[in-house]
Image 1: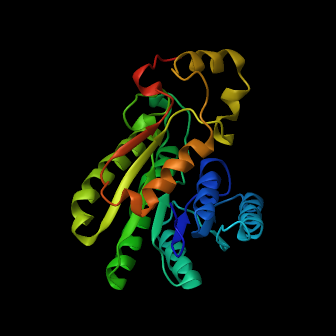
Image 2: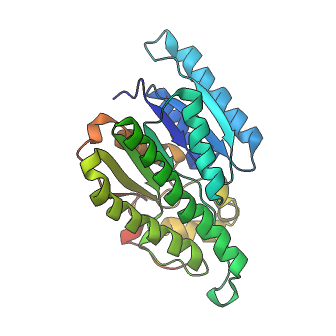
Length: 265
């Protein structure tokens, strides 16, 4: 599987799942754009890792890759459009869009503020919606096919008490994926969801530091462990490749079986 000659933008790629995805795409030969909102050190560290992959793998028949970092707030439509435009200006085109950026806010439903609701929906759904729209406009203008991969969550299907806005945003992403699979198919553009379960990333630091809650969660996971960011990155790389040309409108759960065995903690 190769992505040589392709250009990929991964939003929210300075750490965690996003960082793993951008590294995996780079390993497959893609030139990548690293996006961050408030973690420039992480973005630069990701870029350094990509450059290291290019240098060390070049003699081992691994294509030398390039990376570029861009700061953008995915909650702003103007910033999203500028991000896409700057990515195209830098590399001359975009072939792959991975909508990974996401945030969550913990609160009982009756205490959720409008500000917190807007913050979650703007980044998780609105940002992905308009990033996808701008990317599709680029593909139409250049008469090329492309790949869109949305990073959703098991909580597009699975209730998650005290995270109502987050669940709404992921449910919306699932329906956006299904709708656009129908609407964009004739253009040669595929779109799919990857829905991680419990992944060992910075967003789950509080859980990782609470042994009782962590063990209760692990008891619900048939494979008996947390996922790693690389588990998600591998299927994203597949969906971004030509090997997945006949797959669109689907959600792929990367959760160790959690969805089918979940009990609220």
